[in-house]
Each structure stands twice: as structure tokens, then as C-alpha cells.
Length: 295
Image 1: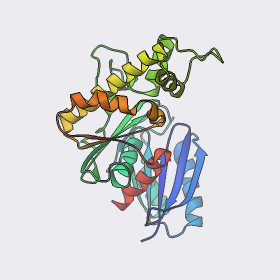
Image 2: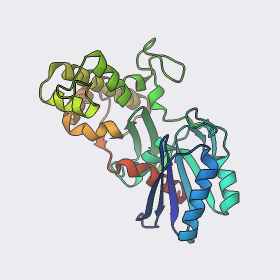
Image 3: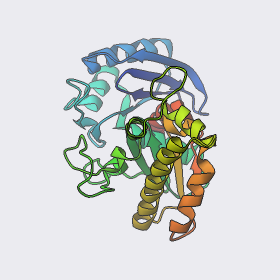
Image 4: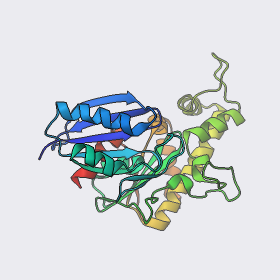
């Protein structure tokens, strides 16, 4: 078996990796995202294929909603022209190599479920807490895509009916309360200021200040963790998962709040549930994309 190219497409950067059959990263390249995405992406892939002619497959994880069977981007508004792109058929025609495409959060979940923090469990959900709130479901080693490629859209579970407006057009979605964006909003509301710069603190600084006893920072932390614990509890009630893996940029500050989260979730659990921190960080999307082809 040859190597596989795994690709993680974000709003500002694209990460491409060549992954060996033993899951070793042979090449790791990060490039800025450019519009239009497709011709630029194909050109970068062709460069890698010259350098690694043994590549047998290409896996792509991308932001947006994906028709995983046909490899078409169904919904994506921030990358102009990307929505509607028939990535799988175009790239397979250009390279004569198998191509699989899925949502980036699903790819991250697949990496953690098969190789990372959730590998000992059969029913895993990975929550990616970054600018928004993403989710991916992996049951028995397989990504659960849903009927229209929309399974795992945890950020759009309605947490507070008639709550804050969301970019999806509805109100009260969980990513308006559990995300880096939500924390920054709460920081502004509670006026959590860095005394040195006289600017609002970052989420990471917020959790450090809360750990050191600053009252307005504690209030923001408590709101965030309460809402996150409700999301986890609701997911368990519906899916009866046995493991939740938490990753994303906000999780980088988890040393300052992890035990508090566990304390909040424990009384809400209906069944035993493991909650674990993601292992792979920014590599997860690239690795999970490569696993799409192996599966």
C-alpha cells in the first residue's frame, strides 16, 4: 500500500500532508487559502504527486457541508465559489487517483476516534471548540454523515430557544454560547480587561484570570462551562455515546477549567461517559482526511 495525501481546508489556510501506511507524516505543508479554491488546490496536489508518485489516494476535509458520497460542497458561504464545487469528480479526473471528501470536523473526529483520545471506544463524538462549535460522530470506526451530510452539526443544536441570532438564520444555537466567539462576547459584556494593555483579554487569558480568582472572569468561565456541560448532556441523552473528545483552540486552555467541567457534567450524566481531551490538535483534520481513503 502506498501513501495518502490528507488535506485540511480552512478559511485562511490549507494544510496538506503525505501520510504513510503506518500513519507517519512524510510531508507537511501549510499554504494560505486562495480564491478560487479548486484550481489552486489541484495545482498544489499535482506538485505533491510529482514528489510522491506512490500516492494511492487523496482525502480532503473542508469547512462547510459536504455530500460525502459525490464529493460535492453543498453549503459554504465564506469561501467564494467553493459551494457547489464537484471536488471528487474533478480531482479524480485530473489525478486518476481515488478522492474522498468530508467535513473538516468529521475528519478531526475520525482521527481522534481511530488513532487518538477515543480509540478505545465504539461510539465517539468529537467537539471542536474554536471560533465556532463543530462536531463529528464516529460509531464503530465509521463517520456518521446523516442523510444529507449534516450529521454532527452540534453547533446548531438550539440551546436557548429564542436566544441569540446565529449565522444559520435561527436563534439560540449552541455555538453562540459555546465557542471562542461566545467567550469573547462574554468578556466584552463583563468587561474583563487586561490591566497592562487596557484591552479585553483573550479567552486563554480569561481562564487564567478566573483560576486566579478574578470575579468577572469567573462569571464568564461559569457561563461557558455550564453551557458546554448542557451540550454534552443533551448529546448523551440522544446518542448514548460512550466517549466525548474535546479539541479546538479553546481546549488549549483546558488545564485551567477541565476539572470544573467534569464536575458540572457528572450530575447530568444518564450513563457512564468518558470525557477526554483531544490528542492531535491541528494535525487531526489532515490525519482524519487521510483516514477517509483508508476506510
